[in-house]
Image 1 (spheres, helix red, strand yellow):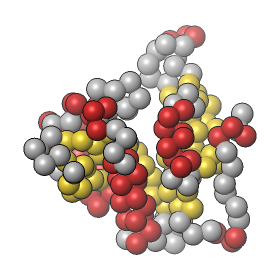
Image 2: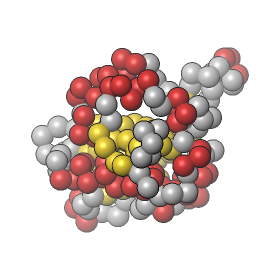
Image 3: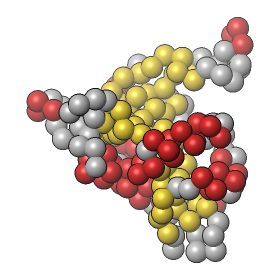
Length: 175
């Protein structure tokens, strides 16, 4: 059992159990505060009844005028709480806000091309690869010349089909 509630600033001091994961991007406090102040309705957390945080999603609305879309900046679930559909629940929350509050056309996210588990999750939720972004992740200093040259997939899920275009392709069809 879990409680889905708005992400609060004091949660930043309680989520180490979630962020200590190789796939989770961790940001500075200012980054999180910016999201919480600008898009509080796009930030949510799953909390265990004992108060321990189980996972969170942080997103934002991007675009202008009538061309808004939701963007998933971070989605992560603590290892001990995975396989309980929390990621699905948190993503559904962000998609609903993107659609109903912002009138978004789609929701997008970036995922490491090597993160097969996350790619499978997102494809199971209806996301597809829109494009491959070369050297998107570049701050670990592991690659040649001190760069981490890992690519990302820009994955998207349409909330409405603009002009009837089909935006769905499999991650396996993108090189």
